[in-house]
Amino acid sequence: MASRVAFAKDRTRMAELEAAYRANLAQKGKADFLDLDVRFGFHDPTSGKKNTGYWTFGILKDAGIHVPGKRTSLGLERVPQPKPQPQPDCPMQHMEQGTLELTLEAGIWVMMVGPAGSGKTTAAKVVADKLGVKFYTQSICAQSSKADLQGYMDAKGEYNGTPFRQAFEHGGVYLLDEIDAGNPNVLTVLNAAIANLEYMFPDGKRVVAHKDFRCVAAANTYGRGADREYVGRNKLDAATLDRFAQLDWDYDERFEMRIAPRADWTRHVQKIRRAAENAGIRKVVSPRASINGGKLLNAGMAWGKVEKMILYAGLDDASVKKIKAAAN
Image (cartoon, rainbow, N blue to C red; front, side, top):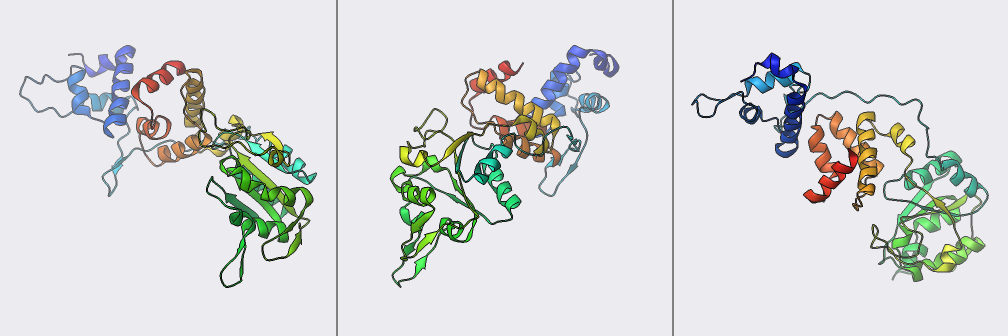
């Protein structure tokens, strides 16, 4: 059995020990030092002596790999983690934010097309904040009806409005989210309104669009139907698509570094994102992974556990191995 000092100087063995330690954290949610002592030859299970995990605990603690933490009332071990590092050289907004604002200012409606979690909703809200107007958002799906967009008259003869009506009549930025998930026939209701800036609503009132009305749509596809990642998307009517300028809204990794709480974790997420793509694995690795994973790390969750929950959730072992191989 090697001494603790000799073992700590052996870089190969230390790398193996750290890997086993992090694997235990990921699989068991805790550092199983008893198991590590046996696996790395610091305890003979046939000796009859009780194993305490003393040796590997000391080695990892001295190396700064394991930082003893406190247990919460839920029994979770919170390991202190470094706080987020400021990234002053990263941009304050998405690289296409200016294009979005300029297009809307010109009175042209925009359909932002990009992957999940790329910040499309946030970008539309930023426009509303800069204009000093209200922000309205409405998500639609295949079951959404014309009434969801234009409102309806109820049994009492009273009109029930919608976010679209509010923005159209009183001003504001209106975001039609998940537009490519909607029924294409229903969406044609908006064609005349957003093209002519005038619309007859179900209460019989013909409304001229407010001068501060802005219409934005967000989609994961270009309206040509489902693809490999977004299988629930519909093919949109050409007349609807013609009402919008289409703006590519991809992940902006420099902006992602600005908004995520942990630079080290964010770099890792971006590396895994590229690895998954190169390995041909269909997995959305959005900036939400950077933001949520960073929060979990700062709350004291182990790195391996965060990887399992945020990056590899839903993937089989073979796909995870392919991604890790592509990342190395």
